[in-house]
Length: 297
Image 1: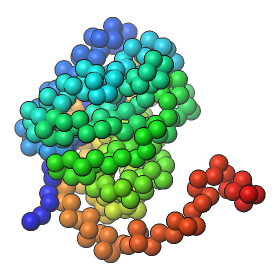
Image 2: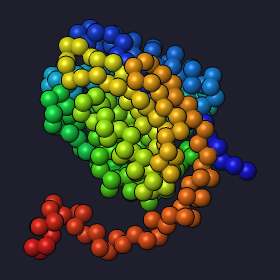
Image 3: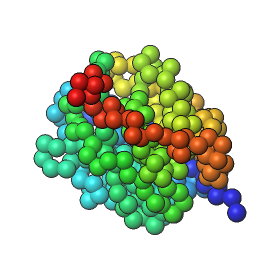
Image 4: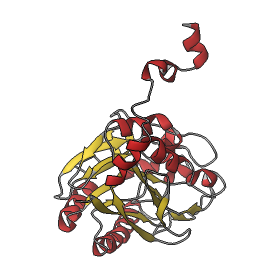
């Protein structure tokens, strides 16, 4: 019997001005997403991923300790606990991107994974933290992830997570494949003029190189008073052959839904034996700070 799983992505614009009280911003964004989640449920989605830091603006556009107040514990914070109830209500696996407080002063960019019965399965912490280009000051807010590249056995599929800037690094994408991921979700926040030429290039390449499906999410709109550019949406699913099979528009809030035939994974891997033909014993330089340093040793 074919293993076909209907999956969904949500892209959305910021709901309130960034100068409003943080709890108002959080509530407005959560309320907006609850309505979009209902849309996904009506479309019978079984796995859903929300965009990066979904309950607020992309506050890394500035360096301001005010935004530390958006942190919460995972899984014991209010957002994950709320989404556990929502997931159980709809019998829907959910990937929920939040700003995690591990302890006072140690914060992570984190995605919690919730099973279809509402059980918290675990979390992924973003590994690669940019601090480059005006307006992407993430090292001010996030500690690099320390939990590896887990794959979560959900009711419907084996799910992995990569977050935004991670997508520029093929090493973790490969580990997710080796760890058994069938679908890798990448919640993101990225703007036109910077990464758009890579948006439909890198992640389909990860899908091809590793023989899995990818769900890539980007928010939409501009977020004043910052002027880092327009979040251009275009969230999409691609299959293990690198073909984009469903994609959102550029400018509006949207729920993207696609039926993923997980049997395609084995079909593709029977042709392209990339995992069989790997030569890990030759890849030592990948774990060195530089190839020159590895050669000197």
